[in-house]
Amino acid sequence: AQSVTQLDSHVSVSEGTPVLLRCNYSSSYSPSLFWYVQHPNKGLQLLLKYTSAATLVKGINGFEAEFKKSETSFHLTKPSAHMSDAAEYFCMKTSYDKVIFGPGTSLSVIP
Amino acid sequence: DVKVTQSSRYLVKRTGEKVFLECVQDMDHENMFWYRQDPGLGLRLIYFSYDVKMKEKGDIPEGYSVSREKKERFSLILESASTNQTSMYLCASSLTGTGTSLTGELFFGEGSRLTVL
Image 1 (cartoon, rainbow over the protein chains, first blue to last red):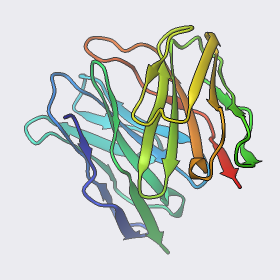
Image 2: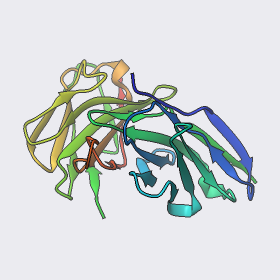
Image 3: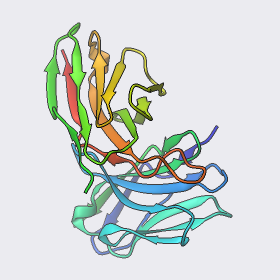
Image 4: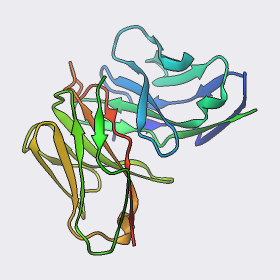
């Protein structure tokens, strides 16, 4: 069965330090991969997407992600965390007949 | 910008009541989705629709039905609400994907938080 794994259920970083949120997906031909952010009591907002173009994808709010086919990974990074980055982050994969979400990673930012 | 509007942000209903959750999108998207979100369980797909009057069961369709009479509107119906349906409900829409993908990016509404007493 296809799957998306987010290896950390919770990540805590200090303000101004780098953020790394990990996502691995089950292999499929030409996947489309996405990262979403959800603030409390809000819907999900798209951060960035990979759809078979450049492997390094830049998104909103300084986030970026790198598609690594050999590692079946699509990790989300940001060089310097801001307090407003505290939220839930979801990795998502689409394939021919499925939309699959990872379980989510809760990011805390310590002042 | 794509806008997905869920008409009710917060609802409180009693056990056994019929509940309608409405979702409208303004970008002529073919696909529409209903998810529920619970702590520790992530997002679970209830139903999706890829065209008017078409629907497909998701992972947890029991206790729910849907209606898509017009392209822009996708309604989730709880025929007889129960306390275990207390949850956050999220609607999303998308264009049909390109290549091998069912769908492009999903656009989400703000969510409807339902409490069943």
